[in-house]
Amino acid sequence: MPGDSRAAISLKPIETWVLRRNAKFGAFALPTSFLDHHLPHLILTLSLIAMDIDQPSVSQPIRAVRADPKKSKRKADEASDSGSEPEIDTVDVDFEFFDPAPIDYHAIKHLLMQLFQSDAEHLALGELTDLILSQPQLGSTIKVDGKDSDPYAFLTTIDLNTHREHAAIKVLTAYLLSRAKSSFTPDLQTVLHAALEPSSSAKVGVVLGERLVNMPVQLIPHMFRMLAEELGSNGQPSPFTHFLILSRTFAETAADREWAMEEDTLAAPAKKSKNAKNPSALTAGNSLFLYHPEDEFTARFASHVADYPFEHSAPRGEDAFGVDSRGRMLLVEASKLPELVQVMMEGCS
Image (cartoon, rainbow, N blue to C red):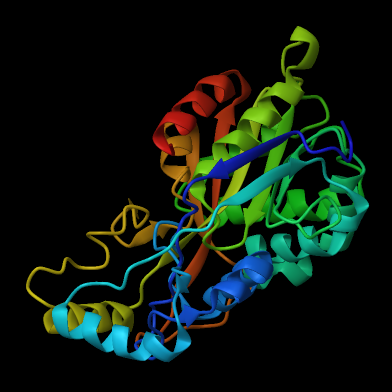
């Protein structure tokens, strides 16, 4: 079904959104007319801003407050004095799923750069994006402004065995083996190396997917569901034996933890700490947290979960502010994908 919308999900209401990482950003108000005509661009802009200033969290919403600009400051002051939040109006948004298309090239490449962070420039992402777009019947994108607009998310898989001679896959495979070796789960490197040998009967599909921050997590299981349906179309079994799902985690620095403790100390007694009311801040060990809440469910089905540092990340001191991003690989047997999708659908609903 190339080029055609395959599904539309209307979240009523959409996740509401507010920037709150830095004290100088608070609730904001916009005229109703602006929201009515510019919501898709507003979401994109806020998401891009949040990538720079916000700790990653899908459940930490952005609130688009519809209000009279002349009254917004007074209402914000009253809400601050009373300890309550301003009244929020919701906006309905239809999210449409499309096959990957050539018009998505720059957006998908940008999302791949977000996925690989500081290592992105070393991974031939232009060629990798071309390979993704060469298989339009596999994977999906999410858009809100029609098929000719930029996608806010994508998900697909590439056969590492079949495309082992492709220039981008050679670079990516070497990178993944290197990062697996540097992780806290080094035996994954051994398993992957054996599975990717030309003589191996294994078929490994690397699952590539990323999205703008604050995309509703409820949409992601549907992307996995459609991917599973495409791989098992016409009643045929999946061509893969394993999926290597790539994701990201982050670690808070000592300076961040100190800042958070000070914020909680100054907060009202009834206010919980930000991690206590943030269900996506799920620990992965003692200090790692998940960017993507659905990774909690994926990890339950994974034979190996490897967290690794990005190879080209800049050195960080103990007093550095901002999240310390890491990479994550999850190896899942292909036969477990249908059950994983079901659990993910239930857990993210």
